[in-house]
Image (tube, rainbow, N blue to C red; front, top):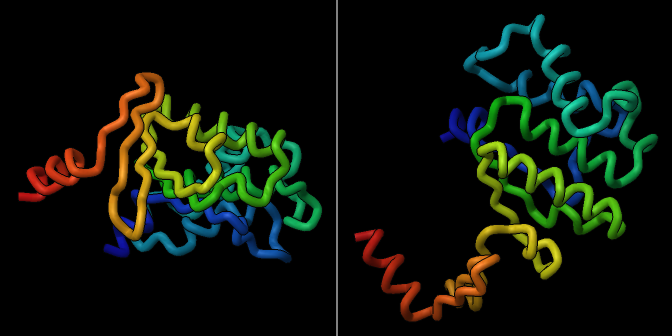
Length: 171
């Protein structure tokens, strides 16, 4: 499980979780330090981290520490960190929760672009604007699936029908 979490799933936290006295570049490299598979040799770490920061539009901020970056820039560092191990899935917890509306929109456009390129994105949010960027919204109520909304098709699937589908797949 630890292998899968470290190599296949990237995490984006609402509070960024960047190391305070560490540059953006070093924060992005961090998952490679903990990668026990040694998928990337040490000499590839910095060029790969630079590539990730360029991909999220922070090529000119690599040597800056988190306190020198805006909230949106810090979140983009967190996204680059989540991508560096070639993740197939990103789990984002309120990825725009600490951002102003403009920065939040930039982050959602970036996540949308990553999804279009083939990365599965799972977002946990209470924000209906963030939910509009997704292909599907699963509403939970009391810890159970309440409804599923397929964006773009305005198709609502009521909870009893959904539960039947979930149970048939699990069987």
